[in-house]
Image (cartoon, rainbow, N blue to C red; front, side, top):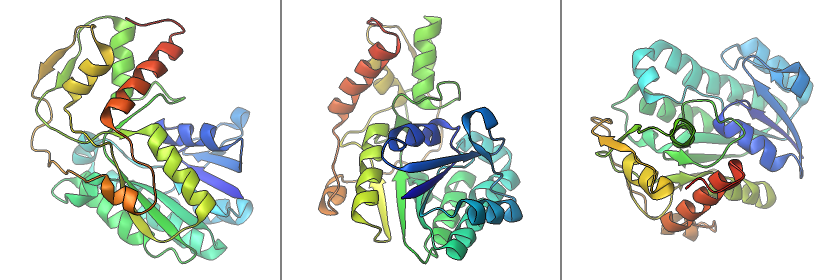
Length: 275
């Protein structure tokens, strides 16, 4: 099975690449590429470039992780957000239909709330994904945590890493509650889909517990000092019953198990206990 991953240099794309390349023929693409790492340069907003990439690679499956994932940036740059998240996804879908590829789309629970540019763009992207003829799965993630090969971008878990590195208090939101997503849980679901087949589902992947950013940072970093403040204003709280995922034959993950794993990941990352 040949798998093409878009956004392979990003937080999630790089993790999927490392998790799958031992068992599958995996090809990575990113906007700027990297010839030394064998990563194709692919701007998903360039329809012609996408078509050429698909015709050359002829993938069996596409894991579409490329996106503009920042809620704040999407609000500031709505045109670019829709161009990347919606039109870019449409280009992927049309190319997949031309080559007969199946698609796993990395979406967000924000798609349930169209009051934000990010949420609206993800909802529209999901509508395009449902037009993939060979088969698709939509994975709706919440705020996601776990060690990735990309520790430099501004994702929530990387902020926790930064707190350890600078050994100085960083402000975390203590207002908005959410059900976090664990990266290893996402990988388990993706592997199961690849083994068992595509059924056109929309799968919400979260832990069973809710938290704020301050709470999860406290649980993972104790006793490192952090600061709390109301940072995430006007965000919708979407709570998902994990039993729904279980009913569809997929594993679930508890909040406490995720936190324990995250602490182990950080200890391994720094090669010695970090507290």
